Length: 381
Ligand code: SF4
Image (cartoon, rainbow, N blue to C red; front, side, top):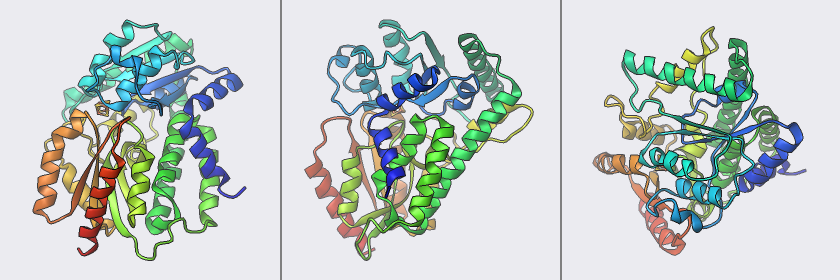
């Protein structure tokens, strides 16, 4: 079927609840939701449990607001809302990486509500460099592994971990290939389709997803262009931490004759950027990847790395005329870095536009006007 694989990615991204429930029913496997970026999913996978990256629902937050502050980011609020509405009772566990103040507050909320059988709070280091940080990280990963062994009843061997790493690396390679196809021909995929594709990988069993991504690549090889504009303006996006970006915003960018050639967003290239080495010490190999500062992440401080330089480099390599900052509303890590990014881009003469991404109420008309002005400005650059 034409676009069958890309449509399947969309279906899964739009209804991850259904995929996950069907997967559990079909395989009788346990499922653990991984909340917050950087959780080493391979360790969960090696225990025989399926990890899924936590998602936000497409519903506005209602009763969740009696448990979580309205000034939390959309993912945090939506996840808690889903939890108290009993929409996540099919999960066997939740693992949270305390990457920011909001995720640090989640254990207190989770402890006061009906609990999943497995709850783990990881405190992976927020700094990259130094021997003591690495020692601490490895100890934390080992603790994670031991907890999963206890919960799953399965001893995780070196081979188990390396097998999972191989499957995950294959997934990274396939996603990278799809990104390369888009870089060469950005008119072949809508930005929202790219997000559906990456999101499907976050939700699906990785082996199933690898198969699906191979079909996506086949489809792309024979696909007609989806952007018909002769000369769309090339832009890159960055930000979008921890969660999907409202697809209407991505559509608006394209409707205004811009095309996203590359990105540095979580449900995007950030997710698959770090392949892990196969060694006889896979926990250390996972730790080494965690400690690499490319791509930079504002949840991990490193005074030697400049996020703006990384973005400038990405824009130049892709011949992009501007950078769109997708700032998740109430996301302190990105908010802390944003003023410096804005100033430096302005000093370098690189046009940048800030779009605040809210979970529910978005004034699309206002966003459209701002995008339109931005497109007009950068067209002449
Ligand atoms: S989006 Fe920002 S505030 Fe929300 S969980 Fe991620 S890092 Fe924390």
